[in-house]
Amino acid sequence: MSKYDPKSLKAAEFINDAEILATLAYAEENKNNLPLIEEILARAKPVRQGKETHCRGLTHREAAVLLACDDPAVNEKIYAAAAEIKAAFYGNRIVLFAPLYLSNYCVNGCAYCPYHRQNKEMPRKKLTQEEIRAEVMALQDMGHKRLAIEAGEDPVNNPIEYILESIKTIYAVHHQQGNIRRVNVNIAATTVENYRLLKEAGIGTYILFQETYNKERYEKLHPTGPKHDYAYHTEAMDRAMEGGIDDVGLGVLFGLDSYKYEFTGLLMHAEHLEAVHGVGPHTISVPRVKRAADIDPATFDNSIPDEIFVKIAACIRLAVPYTGMIISTREAEAVRAQMLKVGISQISGGSRTSVGGYAEEIRPHDTEQFDVSDQRSLEEVISWLMKSGHIPSFCTACYREGRTGDRFMSLCKSGQILNCCHPNALITLAEYLTDYAGEATKQKGYALIENELKKIPQDKVRQKAGEYIATIKHSTERDFRF
Image 1: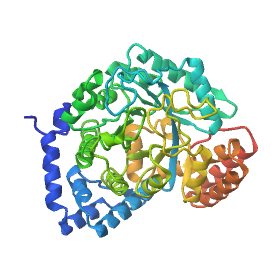
Image 2: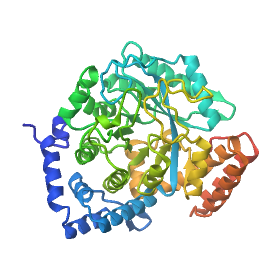
Image 3: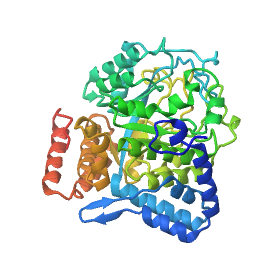
C-alpha cells in the first residue's frame, strides 16, 4: 500500500487514499469539538505585522474539520473569516475572463462531458485560424482582455501545434481599441516538452481540472481514451512546472464523487505543489456538474446543494488564502453572488461554451460543453459587480511584469500585491468604460473609480493612477500599469 508523502511525485502518494479516508474520519470525530474548531478558526485569520498582512492557511485535516461541522454559528464564523481573508489579499476586485472553445473533437469517453467520442449527436467542429480571429474580435468588442482557451483531447485534430498556432493568432489580433493580453490554457495533460512550448508561446496559467481525486471513481468515469490514466493526469501539474509554467490552476468537478473526499484531495494537491515546487496553485476552480447534451446531472448521485457549495468555497479560502478562486457561468447569478462574498476572486462574463459561439449573433447550443446558467452580457455582469461593491478588473499586469509563480505569491503573502492590483484594476476598468460601456454603466463606473482612487494610500501611486485614467478617457493611449 502506498504511503502518504506530499513531497512525492507519485500521484498515489501525494493524493493518498488512506490519508483522505483518515482525514474524513478525523473530521467526523471532531466536527462538534468546538474548542478545536475555535483554534482552527483563530489560526486561519489574517494577522497584521507592521505594514504587512500574513495568513497561515490551514492543513487539509484542519479544513476538513471545518467543512464537517454543521453548527450554524460556526458556519457564520467560517463565512466571516473567509470574507476577511478575501478582503485582506484581494480587496473588492473581481477579475473577469471568458472561455474560448477551439474544438470539440475528443478521443476520450468521459461520462460527464458531451464531447465524449461516443456522442454521435453532437456536430464536431474545429475553428480555423480565421474563425479564431473572428471569435477574438467578438470578444474584444465586448471588452475582454483575458481568455481561457479550451479544446478536447484529440492528437489528430487538436495537436499541440494547433494549440500553439491558435495562441499566436489570438495575441496577434488588435481590433479597434481591443487586444487580448493574457491567454490561459485548459487542455489535456501533456508532456514536459509540450509544456515548455506553451510557456514559450506566452501563456498565462495552465489549467487542468482533476474531475475527481478518487482513483477508482476516476477510472470508471474515464473508461476509454488517454484520460483514463489517473496517474498521468494527476501528475500533470508537476510536469507543467518542470516545463517552466509557474502558474497552474487546479479544480475538481463537484458532484462526481463525495464532496468531502474531493475537497480533501484538492487541498492535498495544493499542499503537494507547495512542498515540491515552493509555490501552490495560482488558481482553484469550483465547478459543479451541469446539464449538457446527452448529460443529465441526476445520473451522478453526489450532487451538492447551494449551501454546501458556498461552504466549500469558504473553507478553501481559509485553507489557501493566497490562491485565486474561480467560478464560471455554470452557476446562476444568485449562487455567484453568494460565492463572491466568501472568497471568489475571478469570474467569467458573457460566456459561450460552444465552438465558434461568440461570432454568432444568436447564442448557438448545438456544440455547447455545458448549459450556461448566467447568460447575462459582460456589461450586465460588470454593472452588477459595481452595484454590489466590487471593482471589475481586466488587469493582466502581473503576468506581463513577470510577477508570476513564487514572485507573485511572495507579494500576495505579504499583502503588498494590493499596491499594484488596486490601481491596475481601476485603470483597466477605465479602459472598459471608455471603449465599450453604455452611458449608464459609464456614469456608475466613473463614480466608483473616483471613490476608489481616494483609497490608494500612496500619494504618488494615487496621483499617477489618476493621470493614467484621465489619459484613457481623453485619448487613444492604453495599457498603463503598475
